[in-house]
Image 1 (cartoon, rainbow, N blue to C red):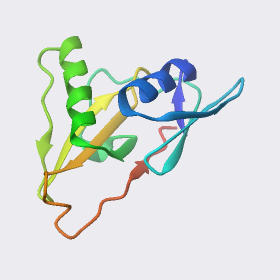
Image 2: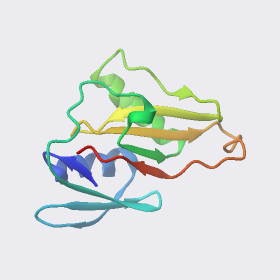
Image 3: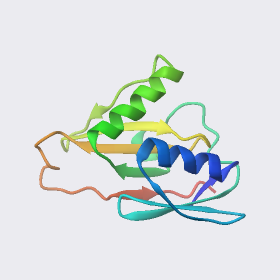
Image 4: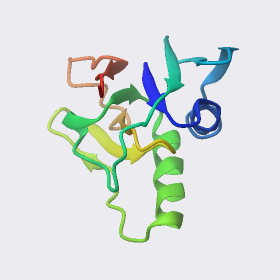
Length: 131
């Protein structure tokens, strides 16, 4: 579960930018599906960050196609010109950390084309509680 001041607005970002789909919406939560898991947004302050942290400190890690990572990076560059691009990790996986509208850090992971994951498959998602 991720906190967001406006769960619906934050969910819209995940739908439009990352390809999630709406599972259901209640008065106090929004549930999305994608990449083999469900993601729940509930009302709260969010992470309230000004800049993306390292991938290890992200609230959520998601394995995405390279095209999705590049599109999110391009969107971020339109807002802030000095945004650093995806970095290639030692496992042959590109990593890019972006902030959702609530300030939650999302680490996007994408393998080097044709390389797989060096025999190791990363988890599809990792969620860290903010509170």
